Length: 552
Image 1 (tube, helix red, strand yellow):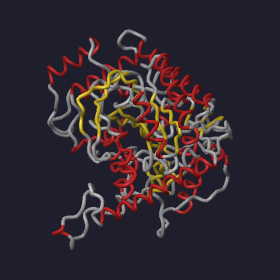
Image 2 (tube, one colour):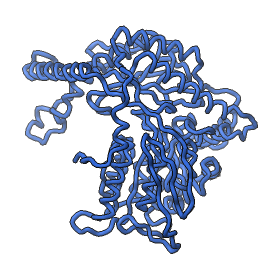
Image 3 (cartoon, helix red, strand yellow):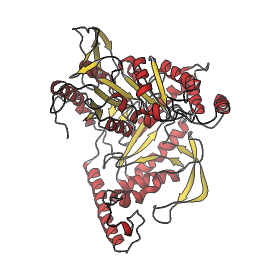
Image 4 (cartoon, rainbow, N blue to C red):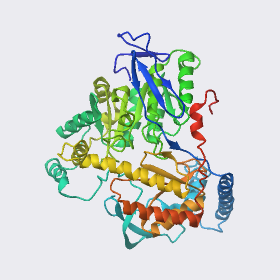
């Protein structure tokens, strides 16, 4: 990566001083998402993990009514814009000042049409303020709107003990202060809150070094580097790894931080279909054969960007297939484990452990501390020469303020807890409890007749709602039942695939999950949300395609 290992890529071929085995082959991928074996340097690695994922399509009438709903909303939006322009209705949106009417407009009227006329109508379902730790329960600050969601005012009432089904608190480590957090308090007293410097200047503390060594040990890699912000870990470091003359192959459902980092790098970006090995291989093959556009020169580097768990779909990367392809075409692999680290694998070590793969097979391992570890920040891990290169060239390390010492201590405490270095097995028990809760919640929803997306082992559980009116009604009714849920729609999802996204936690008890499931079942009957026909998914068939056309 960015020549950290001394190798170069020519049309996808990695040239190093060591000669590779001529008989090595990069893998045999079978159907139904099972990778039987991958060979490298004459050695065979067996991957027996069966990938079970669901992406059931909605009935035709549901899609028709969904698009009709958006169509009717759009027509009324144009009508209301007409009334605002003629002063019949008050306009609460940002408008150009009269004295600047001849200037280039600051506010793009048409681009804000969706937000102004559709999003605002159901805006009360997002950005709800809470006033407690995001544990299995939290307290919500009640607010109301007197102008149809353009502004809100607080009533002074607190909605107590709302079941939290939306936070990424997978292991339940984001909790109120107790005696186990005493080390965090001690670090706060000794170091203070802020560092007031970048890592390259005066901002590298002994706590940061301790954390980096612990992360490397936890992931079983040579070295690791930590950053104060998870989003910036992707967006500010990908440009340090690739640049002009390089090729990025990105999954179509990658997170915005990966997309932004890829765009900032200046590299050529091509998109492959979600979790589709055939789509990726076609792009890799074309990249090796044709090289760069116009000049036909070899790509300097080819980097594959994927996520461990996709946060909107609940699917898990088909890592064995991706690794087999990256070996075959001598590309580099960057895996974002923001949601999978701590939540997947027998001991919570992420997607590599989930599939039984050596972490050294992945060139760049990225993850965040904002989910399973109950803190903030992120890390990059891999070979030592890669990390040493990033310490000098990373924009986040050079310009970003270092991680707060109490935050670093919270991550250290959580990671030791997960590794059993605290002398207990409670961390391992939480990983197992999370897996048990996930399977139970998903199986119950499927039996009820809801369409849910993703892998059976993913703690991210999207329940498809489709229609925008039902999205709002679902969230409002659930809050009335003291259940906090996250609903998601366009542009975070495709226009016709709005959903409720449940995040399962090890801190959820069976009684809590049953309470939530009972409420969901009731809402499913009330709003007619049980669309599942228990038919085979249409999307996994894409994994067996041998030829297809990619969208521009």
